[in-house]
Length: 545
Image (cartoon, rainbow, N blue to C red; front, side, top):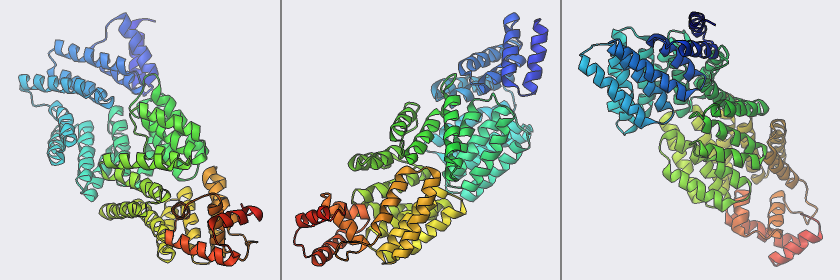
């Protein structure tokens, strides 16, 4: 096909956002006759959007040189920015910094007042934030936004505005930060900015919402990103990230088969043709779903893949080890992860798992301190979901301390919170805890109803480990054939027969060791026994295990 036909059809495909067609046609035209810088920019953009990162970088560099040859210094500087933009998204910050420096030096030498000055401020501002100077970074983002306004450049305005919002959130000014995120998304949602910027801002805003546990905003923007990606099925970077977020939301709402499929698709899209930065998040999400379904081998492999692609596998891996019965391993892993954690979102997610693991390990004091920190973080952020997480953790600790009466209203608050965001699995887990509290208070009927409701949800979801646990709790509530023992005393007897110490029994049942001692005393009195070995023999003789 003649070069002119390939070029014209490639330009047309670019306008239609048919990125693969645009890349193939423009690349063919480039092989026949080297493209001019304007068309090289189109080719580089198309290459980036279909995941051909190495090719995109090379083409941006050619466009940069082409504009320099034409004396178009500002356009050359803009190419340097987009080249750095792509490199930074792949973690190549040194190379990206080199291109930013080159762009700034070009503009400095040319003494040009142009919009590119604002673009080249963005990565410098970002470096300030990463270096621990959020106010300095915010000031530079404001400068970039002013330049964008002065030159009426929608891309720069959107990039600077949403970046300011992210920094304000990091600085604790959440209300103002969220307002800026929403303002940036108005321009994105209206189609006023270019595809490179649309995808970047969408993903960044969603991440910002998740940082403050604003699930409703995250869900709305993820739905919008999904619609945008569906109009461009050959997108790779943003399509993959969109699938990760979509999988998280499907998991939250209990659509686990669809969530697993979305996570698998994300792994495939983000690892081919070359690994994308979000690959680790995709594999981690697969690991979470496999773990909850009881597919422990698959979960282990997914967490390992997540780690290979730069996503730390905690707290999922520690919770997997806990589910596998490796309590000490889980305890060590979650402690190390928490010691290294920075940022509210990261610590909050780790703290919730930390409470669960420490209670299983019998360290109620450590769990109490973690639950208190979680409650403090929830108070600072004023985020309903984080408040729910903190309430659940606080209720678990009170149960472990033997104060079921104090635990019950807190757990009911947590259940209401999960219901409001339609988080079926989390709500069911809290119902199990409410059942335990009801049982400890002697309300066996209420306990059985809570366990039954939780079993039904776990069965619907395919949450096999939780289903097995809930069924065991229900069986333990059945009337005892042994000497009038209560349901709780039967549980203690069975654990004694399995060779568990008082401390291990307390951890397994979320009660104090003193409460275990009291139950043992009642068991010995009711069954006329005098030792643990006699109690073990009794349990086996009467087939109570």
